[in-house]
Length: 128
Ligand SMILES: [Zn+2]
Image 1 (cartoon, rainbow, N blue to C red):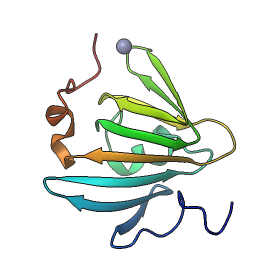
Image 2 (cartoon, rainbow, N blue to C red):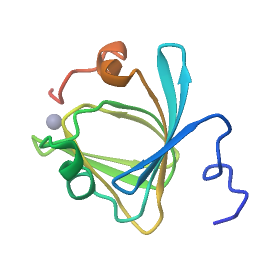
Image 3 (cartoon, rainbow, N blue to C red):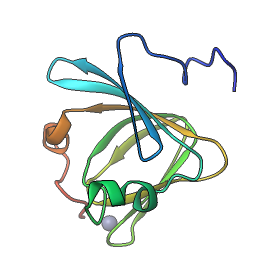
Image 4 (cartoon, protein in one colour):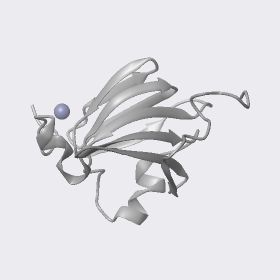
């Protein structure tokens, strides 16, 4: 990738952390946060994050915009959602997720920490 790639470069003022191979840059905004999340190729939540998080599925809501890559989400009931950049992203709590293909996925996400689903009017867990 290009050294000056704006999707991957350092974000001034952001707090950077890495968990389960995922790089997260967090910028606080009012009651919420803007995050850039870089999921490496080969990432799978149930393999890389579940041992850290200790829940059966990812219970976060994800709202944002996928600017690079392909993310596939699978819910407990078997529903599958594919997001291929460029794509708006809305993922209910209660999912496994994986990066498809050989390039990292870059997601720009907006959240309200533990209150994200409620604040966006999303269900607290995936249902129909
Ligand atoms: Zn479903």
